[in-house]
Image 1 (cartoon, rainbow, N blue to C red):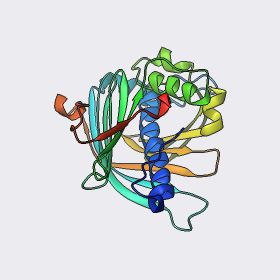
Image 2 (cartoon, rainbow, N blue to C red):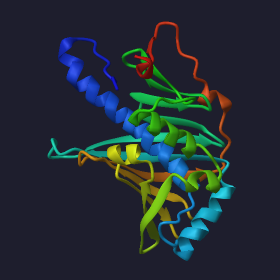
Image 3 (tube, helix red, strand yellow):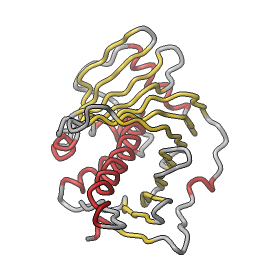
Length: 245
């Protein structure tokens, strides 16, 4: 998969890293949406986990600030950045990283668009159809994650651990797809045991890196304008479709 955005040879490596982590960031949030709806069979959920799952039926829109932490073996200090996201059922997401946004993603029923305003570049990813490849399986997982049905998600995840510390419960999920597990062996979701709001989400990747979001100032069912999910791009943007290369 090519996620390079070079403006010069000197920037080639750094932009490739940025693009890869941007995709991982969006993937993280899509999988969180899926985890909101999953029904686990690998382990029997704790009562508080079952209550959390039941509470997801009340989520129609959601908005929150977050602090994203990226940890890589090659870096001695993790990288952090603020962001904001909006969700509207059944499958619309707007994700912004940085203030002002350096990277944003707009996700709808048929496609996901990653936008880099400073570079005036964007990437389109189709969410319909897939090839028999690892990334094709990942896109299937993304599509399943947009579902609001527990039954649909039941086939996607195993619940492998659940821990309650204070007023936070952390559940650890494992994608059932072998291709997905090659990229991300597990996902951790933390939620409040008092009001069942999302507190954190973390992807652990096969290369040892992690991507974690810690959420704050969340709003349940705020009014979310349709314009936030408009995927129309300015005429002067360069648009690529990496999966079609």
